[in-house]
Image (cartoon, rainbow, N blue to C red; front, side, top):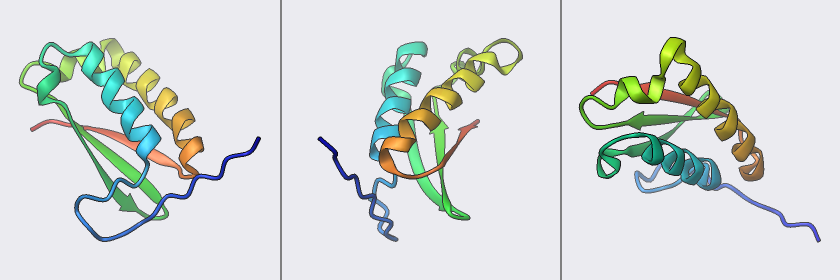
Length: 97
C-alpha cells in the first residue's frame, strides 16, 4: 500500500511546508524544554528546501542545544528523517529570541 504525500508550497503565512517534520520537531522539542507552551516552529522556504526555525522560552535554548550541540544535532537527524515522508529536505535552526 503506497501513500503519496504532497506538500503544497504557498506564500501564505499559515501554510505548513513540511507537516510531518514540523509535528515531529514540535513534539521532540516540547518534550525537552521546561515551558512547552513557548515552543514555536515556523517553516520558511529556502533555496529548494524548507528551513524550520524553532523558538523556545527563556532559558530553554541551552537545554535544546545540549552539550557540544549533541542534542541539537540529534534533533536535526530525526527531523530530516521525518521530512522524507513529506518529500522535502529540511534544515533546522534554533533561534535565540
